Image (cartoon, rainbow, N blue to C red):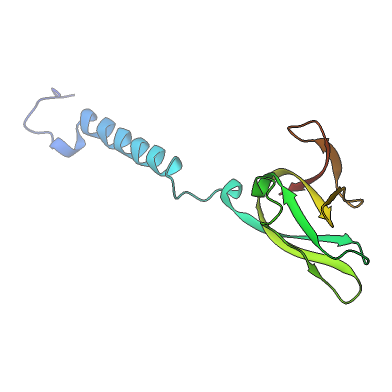
Length: 129
C-alpha cells in the first residue's frame, strides 16, 4: 500500500478526489431536489367543475379561498337545464367555497364536506388531489 501523496498514484483515483466527487454529486442532487422548477403535485392545478342547481336564479357566482372570496371573480354560466356551471383550476389541497345565488350565500349540497370560514360562517369544502 502506497503513500496517499505518492507520485505513482493518479490524482483522479486518490481517496480525496473520490470523496469530492461524491460530495459534488450529493450537492447537485440536493440542488435539483429543492429547485424551484422541480415537478410537484402541489404546484399543479386541476380543472374542477362547480355546478349549482338554481333554475330560478338570475345570477350565480362562485366565491372561495382560491379567489379571496371575490364575488365578481367567478361568475357562473347558466346551462340549458337551469343549472349553473363554471370550471376553475385548483391546486392540490382542501378549498373552502360557497355559491352566491342572486347575492345570497348558498352551500353546495354535493360538497365533500362543510367547514367554517375566517368569519365562522359555514362554507362548502372540496379536496383536490
